Every structure is written in structure tokens, then in C-alpha cells.
Image 1: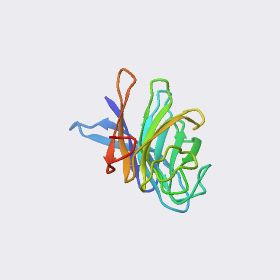
Image 2: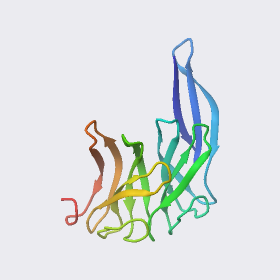
Image 3: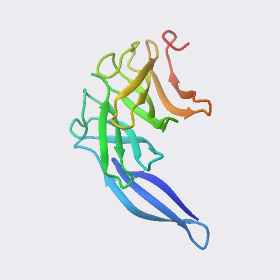
Length: 187
């Protein structure tokens, strides 16, 4: 039986490892696909998922302005879509004039992407910011071009961030993270 894993190593170095069972049933990696994405600054991949068509979606954060479109300032979240061979289909920044971060993504039943993390201001791609140094941000992204379908900011006057997302069989979204405020859009 052959199992396929996706492993991230270094700054945006993506390695597709196809593991074959050895005589001891321990997977032996075959690192046949390696791709590197990024610019001259720091990039962090925090989430990766394979779509039904074999495409890969990566999310994370960077302080590099040159490797995707739409850079705002300081640190922005990003999504990169590649084909099954690792060739870039599109790459886009998401953010505000302050620090923004994308921590995880999943494929929705309609083939689009649900992504979450945090936003640092009420400008750029993100509206509804409540204050503090960051608010939790969740959005649905068009998988064919990276455009935002819908977006929601949750938080108060302190620090909030989403770190994990799960899609349920009924289509509902469960998002988890941290919340420090006593006021705002999440009780």
C-alpha cells in the first residue's frame, strides 16, 4: 500500500513525500517533489491542504512584499495555490496595515477555501476589526482566483486569534483559538 504525505521544511520549502511500506512496515520517504516559494524576508507556512483536483493550497504569514500580489504592510497572511506538480497557479496576500496571520485552511464542500487567523487593523482586505492588537479573522476564499467570497472578524479590545478550523458534515464551521477580551463580538 502506498501512502502520500506532504511535509514542510524550512521557509516555504514544500516536499511531497510518497511513502512505500518497507519489510518492517515503516514508511520509506521518496522526496520526488520539492518546491520553494517566497521572497527575501521571512515566510512561515502554517497550513497546507490538497484539493480534490490534486491542487495544493498553502497558507501562512510573511514580511516579504515581493513574492505575491496585494502586500499591505509589516506582516501579511498569504495563500499559494499550486497544481499537483507544485507549479504556482496563484499566490495572494491578505491583510491590513498592521500584522496579520493565517494559521490554517480547509477545503469547503463547494471546492473553495475556508481560512482563518488574525487581523491587526480595520483596513486593506479586512473590515469589522474591534481593536486591541489583533482580532480573529475567518474567510471563505475562491479557490480559482484567491478572491474573498466572505469575511468575518471576531474579537474585542484585547488580543484574539483563530488557530484551528474544522468543517462538519452539515456544512457548519468550527473555529478554535484564543480570546482575551471582556467586550466585543465574542462573549
